[in-house]
Amino acid sequence: MPQSSQVGLTIRQKEPTNLEAAVDQINTFLTPAELFYIRNHFAAPDLKIAEYALRVGGAVRQPLALSYRSLREMPSKTVVAALECAGNSRVFLVPSVPGAQWELGAVGNAEWTGVPLAALLERAGIAADVCEIVLEGADRGIPAEPPLPPGAISYARSLPLNKAQQEEVLIAYQMNGRELRRDHGYPVRAIVPGHFGMASVKWLTRIEAVREPFQGYWQTSDYGYWDRVEGMPVRRPLAEMPIKSEIFRPRVYETVPTNQVYEVFGAAWTGESEVTEVALSTDDGRTWVEAKFLDPAQRYAWRRWTYEWLTPQQPGKYTLLARAKDACGRVQPDHHDPNLGSYVINHALPIEVFVRD
Image 1: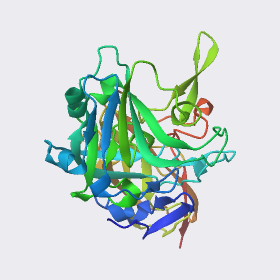
Image 2: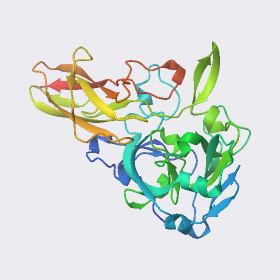
Image 3: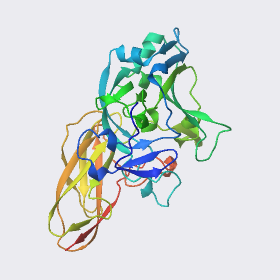
């Protein structure tokens, strides 16, 4: 069985394992598995290939129980998709909030291979009135933070049927051409391109078609946000990632020399669209310049970008900002929306650096 990957990652929480990538060390379009962030809600389960079964049930005509081998024998599809934890960049919130104090590295871009979820739903024959598909993992326990459920629960999330039926949504068994590592969901996980990482359920063991919206803990109490309908607060589940860019280099509080060309480097991503522009400011938002893309626009994948910055002759502290735009016309906001709580931190993040002689 693949080993846990924990080399070169920063510990944000030991139990359960939550590890952040050092994004300043990432140069490639595809993030290597050993540098890909790890977000676990409970201890990683020890699943054996010989005993593994993926069950598809609920409102279906033909319930399924699929072995790992049977999944591997089905027609496969490969998708490149960025995954980001919904709490990524939480450390930038002021005042500080509870939760894992992610900086910039709870994000990665990888190539995923597996069976389209739509193919399994078609084989099972879902009922005409199904509205959502629930994905449940083998990981189980009591959440670390309130509000707490009355007992141990499994990690489970649902997808709207129209999203679940997109060909890009995979039941994946490979990452970057190799079988999944244990901390990344071995042997089988969901991959939901365009949605925050919590939708891509790891250690997947059950898929259930339901006729009513799923009200599970991870759909309502956690990974939710407040909306308003006719003036009344309504709880909704987080889903699609908004447009976001990050500066990977320089690092926060890095010292750079005066009057030298420094290659500012970063990446941008969005949900159901494509990144079209990235602008960079090296003077705390007073002026902006256009960054240069290193990758073509590709739906669901991140686009790396760069800019050659001639550092100031005057020593001091300088604030860099990056702001992206996507094909739908969405632009990163200047401030975090408090209705989103400690999630969806996609405003332009200030990267403070010191310029020294």
